[in-house]
Length: 146
Image (cartoon, rainbow, N blue to C red):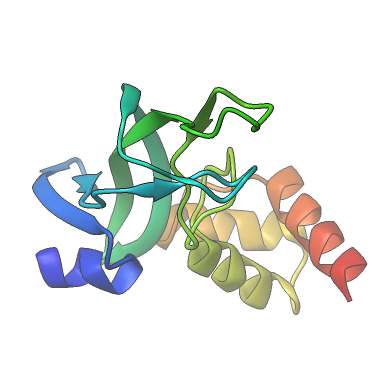
């Protein structure tokens, strides 16, 4: 299972997983020794606190996947930085997102030829818990990016 998690991000370590009613809950944690402050670029190894962050990813063997990440809030060591703390970030998921980028890409790909209602029904059955408004928002976000 650790190999699947490393495909998502090399900086994550697999902790455990549990399958309940067709849903796979995978717990992961960061293995970084230092985290770079996104505001000033200084490295930090001092943890302020940790919290759990849950988001959806692509399904595995017909099971919807929910990743529970033990995320860290870090202290910034730079006295000139206007942020004293920051949250550890990862490339595979946007800030405050509830779905990985690769799941968002799959949702957009599937929704290009169907209505958001039909796509939502199909996705809810086999891929992820997605509403029609989420699909519309993803499509709007993609169309403004180009």
